[in-house]
Image 1: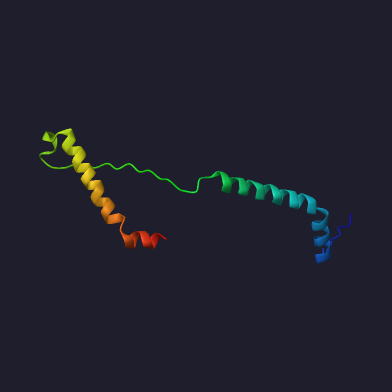
Image 2: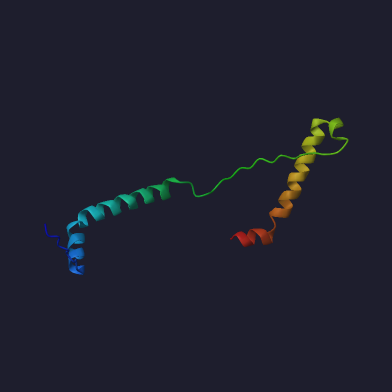
Amino acid sequence: MATTTEEYSTKDYLNALRRRAGLLLSVLALLFGIALAVAILLPDTYRATAEMHIDLQGPNVDVLEPIQLTNYADQYIKSLQQKVITYDNLKAWL
């Protein structure tokens, strides 16, 4: 049994693409349609949430009222916001 090796030219590849042009175009149209649907249906804004655990330490923590702990947490978060959301930081993200 003799083995033959065929060499393909550029013309052969172009003919194969021409024969499968309908299939190629339909797959590309399907992918484009899916990408377009995702772009239209997804919201324009990204929303993220985070949970912070503030570990209070010190000898007087046990005697604090819950309202005092809440106020402390609010003040702590506000100070973090002031440090993070500065003009320079926001400008760097744009």
